Every structure is written in structure tokens, then in C-alpha cells.
Amino acid sequence: MKKQDVLKKGKAKTVYSTDDADKLILHFRNDTSAFDGEKIEQLARKGMVNNRFNAFIMQTLEKAGIPTQFEKLLSDDEVLVKKLDMIPVECVVRNIAAGSIVRRLGVKDGMELNPPTFEFFLKNDALHDPMINEYHIRSFNWATDAEVVRMKELTFRINDILSKLFKDAGLLLVDYKLEFGRYRGEIILGDEFSPDGCRLWDARSREKLDKDRFRQGLGGVVEAYEEVARRLGIDLA
Ligand code: TMP
Ligand code: ASP
Image (tube, rainbow, N blue to C red; front, side, top):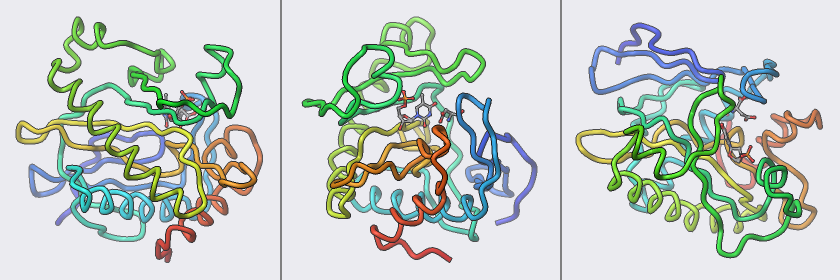
């Protein structure tokens, strides 16, 4: 598979076209961004760690019957994926209150959410990813009603699969963000799943092992990601 043009340079990944019109290459860079790109730093090894982490999670989800864009690992920091028509909406599930929901609703940080809650956000940094609802998605034609139903269904199935996976590794899956796209008439999981886009706490101490370490300047960011990978049995280079 030949890498061709840069189609998009995101905050942490670069997307390349390939000689196959149905496939893209994602390059996981070391760039780490928070607050919609306001804070950006390069963290050594992060591209490699997230690429391998993402590959492991996507393959785990595929085995559990979730359709994903993952095709194969190409190198330490590159992956071959299906080219999706991305839906500009972020799907967030929260099992424990943290981050923006604590600020927005004044609820207690760390409180268990039973049942878990679900939120949609618009993928738009300039607008700081505002929260939206299903009526916005419908009125602005970001996705059809059937696609919304399918995204919610897949996002909750993924919660069951990954909450158990992390629990068995002594971790709490606090919350996470997913993005979906269309491929040959189907809704498929796109983007990435890594500690950049979820919150993971040690189950006993509740120590943060995700990008909140970067957002909050706690240090040891990549070391924490590597610790999570080690607990999941992911082979890092
Ligand atoms: P929040 O608490 O900032 O709303 O984020 C909830 C979860 O979703 C958290 O794990 C971070 C992730 N997330 C992203 O990765 N990117 C985003 O743009 C948003 C809104 C959330
Ligand atoms: N992913 C967004 C950014 O890079 C939001 C965040 O994770 O804080 O700015």
C-alpha cells in the first residue's frame, strides 16, 4: 500500500490517501493537544503507544462483532484503515462523572452514573465542540435518524465490551469519545480509541492514567499510557 497525499493534518494524527481509493493511512504523531488545540506538546513515544493501543482495541472490538475501520498495522506509528465518510458528531458515554459534565451540571466528580449517560458533541474546535442533541443532528442533516440509533447502539455495546476489558486489568473506564463514519451503506467505528480520547482510572487508587495527566499538567503522561498498555498485555515496541 503506497502512501500518497496528506488529506488532513489533525491535532494528533495525519491522514494520507493511498493507491487504493477505499483505504487511508493514519499516522499517529507525538503531538498531544488539549483544550481544542490551545495546549500542544510533543511527547516522545506517544504516537507509537497510541497506534499500538488503538490497534489492540479495534481488533478486540472487531472480534466482539463491532464493525471498525481498522485494516492492519503498517509500522510503529501508522495504520491502514478503511476510508469512511465521517459523521461530524462525537459520541460520549460516561460511567463516572468527570470533566465537562462536572462543570456543566455541578455534579460530584467521581460519582458513579447508573445507568451510564450519553452525550453528543459537534466536532468543531473553533466552537469548542458544543454539546448538541438529536434534533440538531436531524435539522442540520449531520446524520439520519437510523444512523443516530445505530451510533448509540454501537457506542453502548462498546461500553459493555471495554468496561469489562479494563475492569479485568484493574482499571475503571470513566468515559470515552467515539466517532463513526459511513462505509458501503454501513455505520463503522472510525477515528481512534486510545488514552487520548477516554478517561481511565486505577480501580483502587483512582489515579488518572489518561490525557487528563496532560490537561492538568500532572506529568508522566506517556508512562501512564504505557502502564495501561502493559496491564492489557499490549506489546509495545
Ligand atoms: P469531556 O469531559 O471533556 O466532555 O470529555 C468526555 C470524554 O470524551 C473524555 O474522555 C475526553 C473525550 N473527548 C475527546 O477525546 N475529544 C473531544 O473533543 C471531546 C468533547 C471529548
Ligand atoms: N481533543 C481535544 C483537543 O485536543 C480536546 C481535549 O482532549 O481536551 O484539544
